Length: 426
Image 1 (cartoon, rainbow, N blue to C red):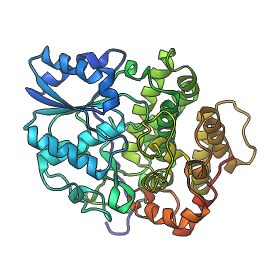
Image 2 (image 1 turned 180 degrees about the vertical axis):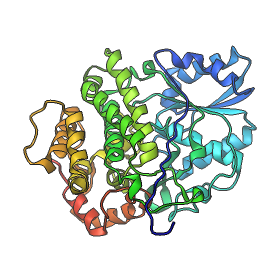
Image 3 (image 1 turned 180 degrees about the horizontal axis):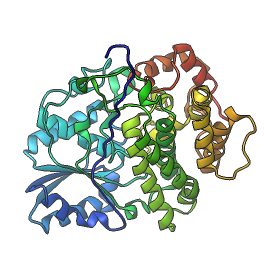
């Protein structure tokens, strides 16, 4: 089949339980897997809310004992994931895991499940060229993902992301066995999120939907054997459906969730659906330049401390990092599929009076949204300048798994130009 184009695409997602109060049924859900002892992973902020303890009580009602590990790091690192895995190894064995939190918690739980069940070191499994890219060889333990933010869609996906501290770069692990066994999505868990977190997390949904919708089509890749297939297979008819639906929900609910999130249950519910739907899209089609650029933006952070997040250390929240170069990235990718970019602009801003120039319509829609919800104005607003661009580019170029999903070939000069033109977006 050498030299021929791909004719097969893959799509996967976990069983989903969605709705207000869904998290109260987790005891029943975990009991169906025969679990008797479960580790609940969360972060300190979520732990203070009492959600993890409420889930522990739900487990007890079904005869399941549990412990809570609340040491997950917001925007996880290789070090924080190693510490979580070591705790799980020392306190185990476990019959299953429950992740209660945002993408940081769910991604950490995926790594804990992998390392406690398969053994080895974290870098053995990290995507090449940064890590060894080793594939898990057997089934992992049941993992129920309970998102408390509307953003990452990690409850639907088969990948996890982390900062590699020594290299100052973000990367991840990608394999279908990492996908949670079940996603339990309860909109009530997001009602108290600060507006800044709602905005940043929501921009992650926006970029997931847009990047998967504009990804390189699966049929343009060289044909693969079964052993060569990877999680990201390119834009395909099934992922397209979920991405489009996610964008429609974002258009009707995102601004309301940011401005009236404490009172608007419908907006919160729609954004949770949008996050899960976008996860079902990008978790199979893939993401490209905005996410590849986000890794060095977050990994090389200097002194930026975002409002609404823990103030103890500098960080660029993932949802901000992916959005800062998105307008320029979609200007770059526009020639590859104009109709897709125009359709996306229409879905995100139906009936809006947007730019006349076709290539400016999607960037214009994004910039208007970002300005309205308080996203920083480009990478300059989070501490970077033109002088930092040569240092940012290598971190992006290491993300070849993502860049290969871009519908246009991407060079170092292309990425440098995108960063330079994203110092400010308006």
